[in-house]
Length: 264
Image 1 (cartoon, rainbow, N blue to C red):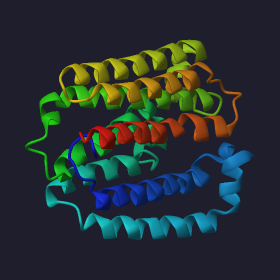
Image 2: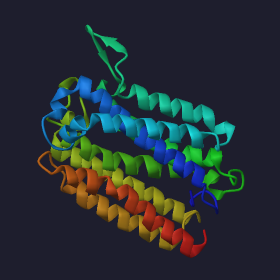
Image 3: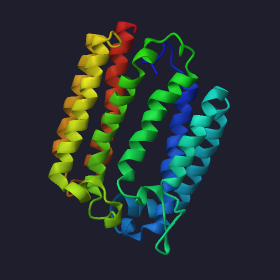
Image 4: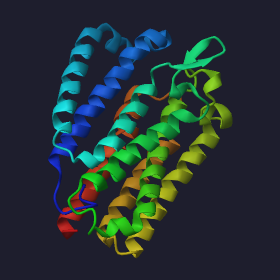
């Protein structure tokens, strides 16, 4: 939020938090019926055994999402509705194909791009729609670079999860690791991480970021590269859920600290 305006919209942050919790848990519940191979061991087996609690948490998160949605500007509703629809259809099987029904995630190459798209819209487009400084912010002049920076970053940290799931994903999904193999997929993820940093550097040259903020993005990029280059299907769940996913939070903290420090 600090990238777009001087004040934080806590209602939007709470909305995104509850919506994320509700959506991810809902997707897990659906997978319990459609993907039994996920239930054999580890985190997914624990979630399956605690599915009643998971359903209750999903319900509470859904209520929280609906409550905080009322505090958002009405102009953001169409985008929010479309992103919510994509998130639901990502896992709900509705596309008829060869006697089966497929979800959006089951279509070739769609998994990683849909995840990156939804999170890019959530972190860039909707804050511009809900922020009070939309018309005055300098980021509207560099909108394309901001979109590229976030989308490339999200692609870079999402591809490792396809590497993790390469043995579980249906071959018809044709994920990047299935098509290119693990090592070339790592190279693709590295390329996206570097593209994201180049976009950050250009935003710095444009005067949108301070040099201190660029240093925060540089540190985040180095951390991303560490996790990307060490990704393989044999890594533990904590490596991906705690490490790769954790780079989202670490980047947010680093960048926010520099923005607060520099009063950007």
